[in-house]
Amino acid sequence: MKNSRKIIQNSLAFAASLFGLFIGNASAEERQNAAPIVEFELASEVLAQSEIQLANGIVVRAADWPALIIARFSNQNGGGRISSCTASLIGPNVVLTAAHCVDPQVENGKPLLASLRIGNRTLKMNCDMHPDYSKEPLMGLSPRSSEDFALCILDDGGERPQQLKTMKYEVVDDDGVLVHGSKVVMTGYGCKDLRVVNGMPKAGQWDGYLRIGDGVIDKPAGSSPGRASYVTIKSVAGVEPALCPGDSGGPLLSGITAQDTDNVRRIRGVNSSIAAVEGVFISRISATGTDAFRSWAQDWLSRNERFKPEACGINFEAGERQCRF
Image: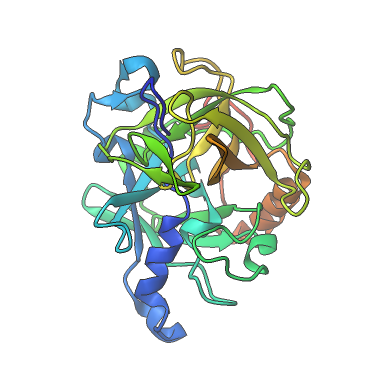
């Protein structure tokens, strides 16, 4: 995210575009046998250990965000600028991110091969995009639909890394409804500042810090025709936090503020896209408190039952197992 108080956000639609360049001409068999294309790492390992800089210049321990994972890559169309996708570990073997982070950018294509690197191990991530997303036509650099959700099984081969055995996982709220005026916190890793250039959001310098910032819901889910799962946040350019093109997949949170992240926090959505209208940024987040997400998540759990998925807030309650309170 970005703002004058130094707030970052998560990189949005650049990810799918770049990854599509890598696999667009590969056969299905080649993609199946290829090494993972999207490699995530624990945020605590990507970010400087004590240099996670939040809104208002607050610096906290990397350990405050153990369940965030980040994938970084060079955007070939962005002058070599580093872009990223973020995801949340919502259990020891379940990851939540944006569908466009694993979008193959081909019609009827399977999600991109993904992995999580922990220490000297690389764990495969088997991802599924929301069906209402994958059935839509390609939209270039933009997500295909507001159901911009992907859930992934994290395969540890029966040998769970120690970090995952002791981690406290983020909890999804798939029941509560965000309304106009709901207070939320945006997270991001995409850029340091954001400007409007020729009517389009343009990200400035990337400095490798995670930032968060307070926001207020402008339009709840169901308000925008054709974008039923989006909630939106308006931000005055250069003043208030807004998602950067590069903040994809990061969680929208409630229950905390940028100054106090240690309260009961819940994931309320997934960073998806951003637009600029007359000097105002419109951040679009795919909300988890919708029938579209809720019903699909339950169906996804059933279809992946053989992997015994543990998803905090979906099939395990807050405080249960390793789920945060």
